[in-house]
Length: 292
Length: 341
Image 1 (cartoon, each protein chain N blue to C red):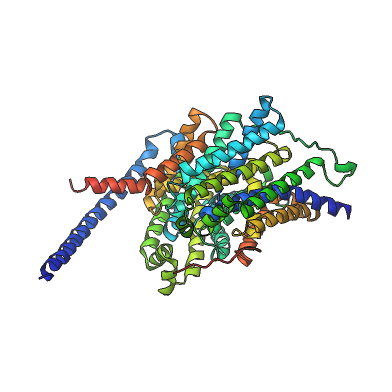
Image 2 (cartoon, rainbow over the protein chains, first blue to last red):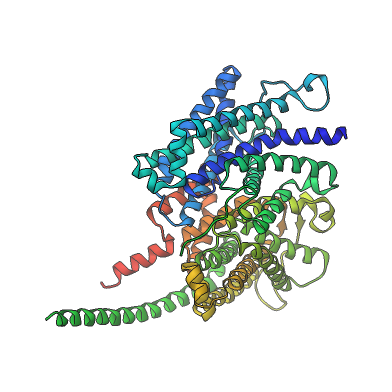
């Protein structure tokens, strides 16, 4: 029983990261109807920026905040430079642009900081929380930071004028433009926030998976799985889905012999295909209808 | 008095169409001439260049074939796949395992690899029916990411060799043929390539091909015309996987080695880059894509190791922004400009 509880808590901790990645993916999906395959690489790049600042001797939280701010600006810049000009291009061009961004970020990170595995510090320490073996302080910190971030985002989107404008721009761009919302900038803002959320996720998971250019591939896959499970059209659902796949991953890893430990990515594959086959809109999402 | 201008306009249109047909017939002749010349060059080349270049050219054909597979799916049927590295890997592993575990002749590994990939592709294509566009890209992305792990899976190790992979021998030329192993494999690959490219060209021109393209252009209208979209989409996925699987088997024969980490998501990226650069929906463009995928990373690595991803990305963006129809489209454009002269 204790093992089960321990695994569920550990699952919640990694699930927090998957939830953040799922949310980042959904924020861009809502704005431009595309899946950002470079989301993981953006988060990885942000984490490397933070690492560089730590190497320069900056205190952890200063590096954390500056990295998030830089990621926010970087996200806006990517949208303005890369994706705005091709917003009406065919799907394949857009997909290729995401793949291009993936390649550029991945290999320039390798070029600047090389491909060796680096350790990334945690501000929370790794001792067991409250002296018990259930969960470490870093895992508790991951959950806490994610929950705070999700709470802030929730109040931003529900409570602020700008949040309302962003939601309007995503739901119905034409009408939003008619009431004077600058839809283009709302999309750019969505990109910025998504990059910032990804940066937080990257910095929180880096102490666990270690820092290297390919560190986010598996995390992103689980983020996608979470987003699909919860529903790509529902940010809240995506977050719930992210937590759920974190727990599923950990439980399968502990209780299913062979499969769980060695085929973690395959579990995500099976999850994605299964959800898409049974209920493509996800648990909390709306079904899509195409107009002829 | 409005009818005469209309009539002349109609006449003009008809005339223009006539000349266009004439021009396309002429360009058809040109096209056959170009293909014939290319085949002659391809036949002569192995006697002129060094063995390493022969090996590289063999790989160009292998990648060209793999890109053709992706092209059938994306260029002609409008479905997206980021998972063709997985089919390439399955094809390569099928060939390697067959040659390692049994004494099947090397040429039999190709149909086996192709058939297995067809089945896997067909089965993977079944959920694809419900997945449009991006969802399919997502599912295939997951497949590509998970593939190396599946190949390393411990219980399969007696078969796959785990992380170590499998080393195989290069096939010998049949007795009495005065060629060395590299040259023989080159001609073998060339023969397979020609058959499969001709097959793809015929498929695209056939009734089936028109149905496949109709689904790409307007799925709902295609369904309304009585095309069984579900059947054609899964079949195209299967055929596409078949092509890429055969390419994988040929690749394994040429490189004489398979290992899980050769078939990562990055290979899918390479194939996609080759597809976009060569020209989406162009059959000869696939070969240009093959040339690109083989040589550009080599050149990039001369500048700096590990930079090939960035070079890929930048070239992809350039193609999207500047040359949206790829190299084949550029050739067509240039020919159209230079043609009347």
